[in-house]
Image (cartoon, rainbow, N blue to C red; front, side, top):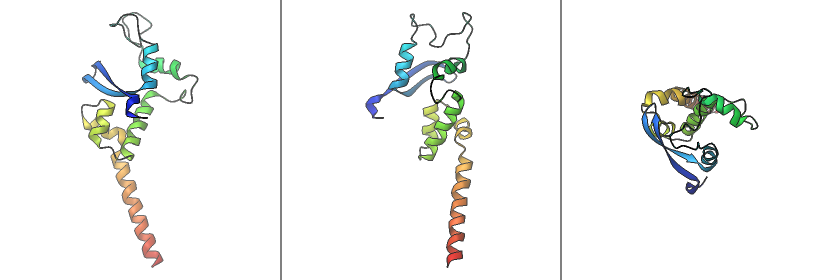
Length: 134
């Protein structure tokens, strides 16, 4: 996706306060389709006025005809974080992409310990293999 296909999206009311995140055009187009008539109305409204339903219920409707129909949104967040980590993004960058104010939360998402263990296991295996072939 070219940088021209990414928009800075401001979220004023999150757990962390104001948050600015990159959003791809397909997601922005979906949000635009769901835009409420009044600017102060929620994009994903509850079924009872003033009561939030939660994004997962909206997600099921959005994703029902896609390959992601059986995937929970939180699983996508973890997968995204893990992929970014595997691509070499820093923990701080992954935290910013996810909207985390504290890196300790992000560490649970990216499973850095798992990555380190795999890296060292692979190195040990390759070293043992080299010694056995010598």
